[in-house]
Image 1 (tube, rainbow, N blue to C red):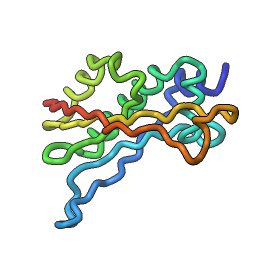
Image 2 (image 1 turned 90 degrees about the vertical axis):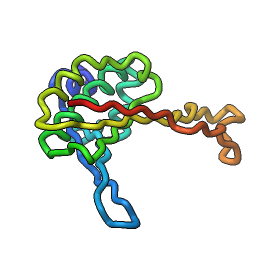
Image 3 (image 1 turned 135 degrees about the vertical axis):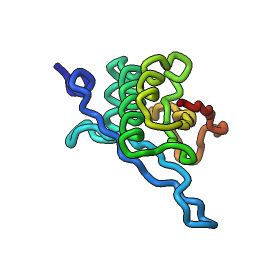
Image 4 (image 1 turned 180 degrees about the vertical axis):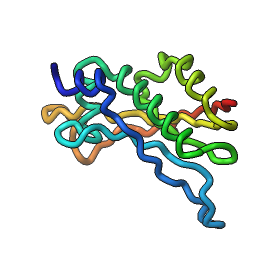
Length: 150
């Protein structure tokens, strides 16, 4: 069993909630859910790279969303706070919502989640002109959507 297979099978992902603060008032207005894998070779970005190369990115992304939503409910991230969750652009259109809605139904109040993505840079290939440090791909604005549960 590969590292990413073990992570997915045993759900070895957890979510850290980073506060988002209104700089004018100092008030916490929401939290961004940051996915973390097990310590070691599949921590942080390596986790998503391993899932992408194994063809299991959609499974990892869905697991991260479930874990983030459960963590937010336990932490009491309910309205008026917003939970921000990043979604990999390649899987956004195929992201199942049924299980997330079922998890949200367990919240003691109304939950607002916002999913956003930004385009991934193309893979770097040292032989291609696009890999030159002087050139960068054009940036598109992030996509975002909001869902209120409750």
